[in-house]
Image (cartoon, rainbow, N blue to C red; front, side, top):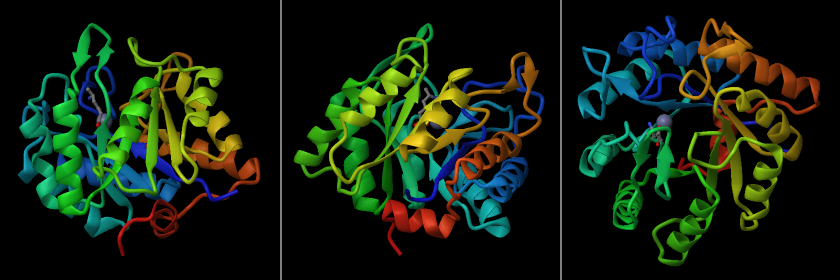
Length: 271
Ligand code: KMH
Ligand code: ZN
């Protein structure tokens, strides 16, 4: 089995300091969290950024600073969010692609998102995919529901997505696909040959789906964006703490953890 790729989703767009006192917000805090996550076993960091008021932003200048601070400290793969926050206009969501990060997320369908709707119209998805292709940015295909997988495969047919494909199943969002092992098995069975995948379980689905993914040969995303608890009612101390547990479980199960360099090779990132 290939080595495990761990992604750390450090910040998110929805979480506040009130909910999670250890949430990294400033560029320095995010870079320190990225470096600690790398030391704990992460090879990718999934990045949202915040403005001076701690609000989610797609401001290119903030992303530039965060990525530059990360690169001063560590060799982890920087993956920017083009999802932004619920309601962010699609043009703003695309803006940080001008920085040509190694990876960016591409959500391939609309989903109810708690009491909100995370809108991804077909024209918006194609706009983002075309922009990523032009900038040479590798998409991570975010599927919040099973239908988002076939939407992505249609983009391959249209020439807007290139293989090898890298999927992320975000499971357990209220309104999206439930965070259960049978639902994950269904997603994995829907993939074309040669595609790689990871799972991002939301809340209490995080750990149990990570364990299933490790055994099945998939990859794992953890971090405050998806889950803030280490165990029932106990807040995690850091993103790195959540990453370290996944690395430990994987090694115990006989699966080594990929370095960023090894992850680049596995995902097929441009040299
Ligand atoms: N904040 C969510 C509405 C992504 O990063 O690409 C969307 C999201 C997906 O987090
Ligand atoms: Zn995100």
